[in-house]
Amino acid sequence: MSESKIVKLVDESSNRSSELPLISGTLGPACIDIGTLYKDTGHFTYDPGYGSTASTKSAITYIDGDEGVLLYRGYPIEQLAQQSSFLEVSYLLLNGELPNKAQFEGFEHDITHHTMMHEAQKNFFHGFHHDAHPMAMLAAAVASLSAFYHDDLNVDDPADRKLAAIRLIAKMPTIAAACYRYSIGWPMRYPRNNLEYVDRFLHMMFEVPSEPLQMNPVAAKALDLLFILHADHEQNASTSTVRLVGSTGANPYASIAAGITALWGPAHGGANEAVLKQLKEIGTPDKVETAVKRAKDKNDSFRLMGFGHRVYKNFDPRAKIIREMCHKVLAELGVNDPLLDVAMKLEEAALKDDYFVERKLYPNVDFYSGIIYKALGIPTEMFTVMFAIARTSGWIAHWIEQHETPGSRIGRPRQIYTGADVRDYVPTAKR
Ligand code: SDX
Image (tube, rainbow, N blue to C red):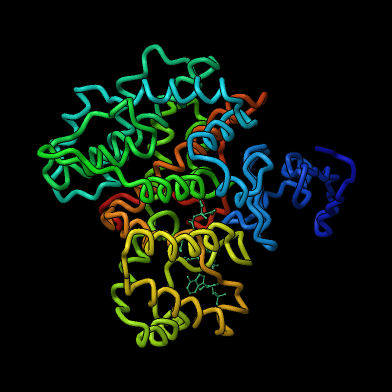
């Protein structure tokens, strides 16, 4: 990282100026360090959606939105998708390097032996109606971990931070499966330590009390790959939420629970559920043109869910991989889902339409993922829960990086005040 050039900013109305360092990282655009701007000029900057604002330095993930590049600790997502596993990628995100055999075995052992949740935690589920949305249950259950692991937790102790990471990555599938089992009225299953991470999750999701579950290697491989693709993505809304909550010194479980609630929104991780509902609403390929027309109509709030991205102004590299996976996994599972035809027709129509081309709107990670989840038997309401399981590794890696960074401060943005000017109180009788 280098600081060399200076950007001089002059306010001609007051003739005050500021000389601001230009900071460059390993890759990507240089950033103007505006730390002294208010002191020098009396002005704030204004960037409500943070479209031009870097909130932190990070060594975890790099995205080049114009080129459609995604790197986890420098490794291209395409190579990790082909050669790695979700647990190995989680180790990479947390530690910065790929593990050797002994390191991976140690990590896998730690994860495997932290998969159970406290028996008392199961009581939380019984407070929900059976039709409660699983993201609401997941957020509450993960936040409740901060009640079980708070007193002896020291966020300034690296060992405590590592243990929190292990517990969260290990328990998320157990809690997620419990949300699903509660919603269908089935008994919760204990994690089986003799199964690998994704198989263990599928077992807790689908094993019925009356017969052993036939494990499906195609399903496990597909889900492991989807988890790799969803594991991290730089300073997206939910990761930024985790960092902002973490910057106050809050408990890591509470910080991750905040990330879960941010992810739930349909503009973010909730889009995968919204895509499936939208494809069902469109119904058949011949109705696609109408949907594209509605998506372009400024008087219609309808948007093509799974399309567009704040950073990618090219194909989301994850969407490309998932689209190829769709055909392969559905064929291997012997599933013929007409919604895939609708999705492909929608993509084709949008990518030929000037509205989408001019705005560089391409399919994002959420556009095809739901079709695979559906083929794996995962209900639509659980799609964003899948996203949360995977993104937990990225979230906690960012939370740890933040706590390892010397001089980290509480996040506290300013504002442009547009309310009433100062005025005196008016007694009721005079209002
Ligand atoms: C994720 O940040 C991350 O990295 C997120 C994520 C991750 O891994 O963490 O990648 C995961 O959240 C992916 C995004 C999932 N969301 C959706 O698929 C919802 C549908 N997409 C949009 O709502 C939208 O594209 C966003 C929210 C993703 C991005 O919003 P921006 O960057 O604020 O873009 P914008 O709203 O300013 O749109 C720019 C223009 C506007 O038109 P004009 O005002 O210029 O005329 O594009 C239009 C928008 O109306 N537009 C769309 C559209 N997305 C943007 N028009 C129709 N359909 C869409 N999907």
